[in-house]
Image (cartoon, rainbow, N blue to C red; front, side):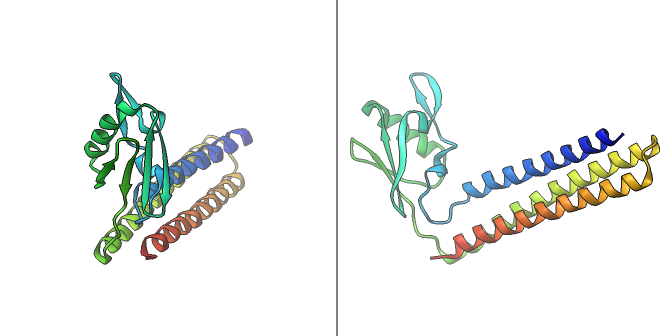
Length: 187
């Protein structure tokens, strides 16, 4: 029975880590007014009839804190890359000089910053809901196992371990949200 308890704890840990990974990805997409090549990770370019990630047809980097520079490996790809950026509807205005594409990241207004902070907090809250769901599922599984013969002491010990897991992940969420909030509010 002990192996089954360990499996329940392992599954809970995996679910909680998955929620944290999802939060990381969501927070990267919320731009804080600073140029970051990962802002363009969701962009796919028509590369000879195949939808290809932008970073597989060009070098994507930053030249300063406010500028993303995209240098296509083939010059004829400048047009399709520019179209893909516009179609992605990220609020960017690409500027091409025939060699490279530059994207200037505009300064954030105070209202926009407040809106982004709300969005960050909402993502954090969604992650906490996922963590609580993982905890609930694990505890339900442990209670079923107790009915099937698991000792009450083992079940309580396992529940305590699940609670310690969720506490650890809650701290991570709080820290990630605080860091992103500070990043957004820093001018």
